[in-house]
Amino acid sequence: MNSKSATEMSTKELMAHFGLEGNGPRSVFLQLHESILGRGALPAGTKELIALAVCITGHREDALEDHVERAKSSGASKEAILEVIGEAILMGGHAALPFGFEAAKTLKGI
Figure: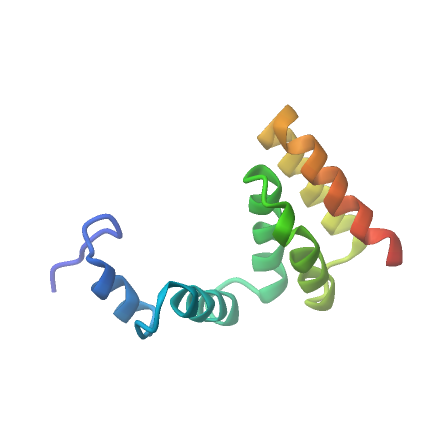
């Protein structure tokens, strides 16, 4: 079997790889979200910590609280979440700072 990289695969091939059906962009994105976060070699909590770091470095304020809450409900400790926030700020530079602070604000309830 000829193995293709993700950049060589068509959208249809990528959708089939992840078991997605084409019902519009939002539907496909939500299916992908559940498919990726719901299975695989990494535990759900680890995936949520990665998602949180990506939200901080990618300036996705709209998703910060959701991924902090998902990380908490997946068993991540306050210390682990704060460590990821710090690492994301370090890797994202000055522009990631306000997003890291916003993520940290959601931890007051822990």
